[in-house]
Amino acid sequence: MTDEPQIHAPAPTGPPSSGRGLFISLAAIALVLAVAGGFTVATRQSELRGLTKETEAQSVPTVAVIHPIAEAAQDDLVLPGTLQANVDAPIYARTSGYLLKWYRDIGSRVRQGELLAEIDTPEVDQEMAQAQATRDQIAANTLLAKSSADRWLALRATDAVSQQEVDERKSAYAQLQASLAAADANVKRLEQLESFKHIYAPFAGVITHRNVDVGTLVNAGNGGSQQQLFHLAQTDPIRVYVTVEEINAAAVRAGLRAYLELSQYPGERFDGQIVRTAESIDPATRTLLTEVDVPNAQGRLLPGGYAQVHLQVKAQTIRLQVPVNALLFRAEGLRAVVVDASQHVHLRALTIGRDYGTALEVLQGLSADDWIVLNPADSLEDGERVRVQHAEIPGDLPPDAGTGSAGRGGSPPGPPPPARVKK
Image (cartoon, rainbow, N blue to C red; front, side, top):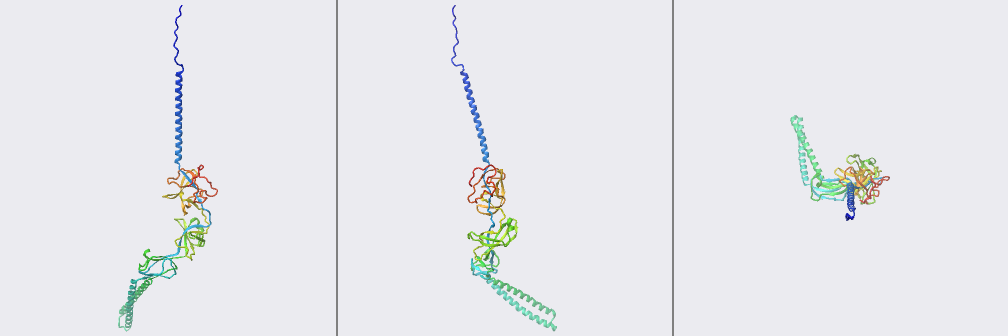
């Protein structure tokens, strides 16, 4: 028996698991790409949320805040005032003519009744001569009328003339008497005008203006500043008018002591006293007009000068100051921007007192515990939300500026403040 040949299948040319490995590799790559894509999307969403938060945060303005400045307590009430002459009068001519001569110039101290100038009045002189001649003529006619009336009255006693004729003579005499009185009055009027050729000082004082020179045409009466001959001021005593706030008005009365301080006399005091008040509060300013008189025998105090007036009464108001860069100048008036505890701003109307240059005194509208915004933007609106920073105290303000009175919190409203900023 012969053996039949056996047929064998050919051996495989590659490993049987190579297709499965390729699939796994592709799946791994796809998984890596999916993870990378998810991470990228998540990162971009996180950046978008961060950008949104940052944009929202930047849309809220950041402001620097301080407290109003509490002024130091003092016993005197200090107010600004302008020096004025006790008596101040312009001097005009009462007759017309040309200035013949003047005797006193500016700065001259004159006595009451002293001659200041002379006026040449040729027209008045001619009117005076004519009036005197008319008066003499009427006086002569009056004498004749009186003599005639007396004769006719004697003839009436003998019944030589009628009563009608006597009455006519008496009436003519009476008319001439009236005309003589009118002529006398006209002569006296012109005599007065003649006397006005001499300009005399109405009171003792100092000449502050001389507005005419020799040859100037002068018209009678108050024709305005161009017709003013001299200006005379009485400077002893000097007087100062001040306006006292309503809250202190009750403490101000006549007889209280006062004194002046002037920058040209550092360290000196000029003592005086309150002589009168208006006894009425001005409804427009809510102040009391007060007059202080100060002796000025040496003439060191000049009318028109500025002085700090110290009224020796105990000030009853709590005075606050704010720097000028903490104010908004709006059409409706002066405003300060105040931040509340929820970090929202409110615009407050202010009543201003004295001006210190870099700061203003606030009479109404703020309290010592308010936080006010420095350098507020014009775009700030009432109720707007802000972020706050505690500002450094400006170098030209008192050391207690911005810190408020004792016992007040030193932190701005809302969350703890960021780093302090210099303004």
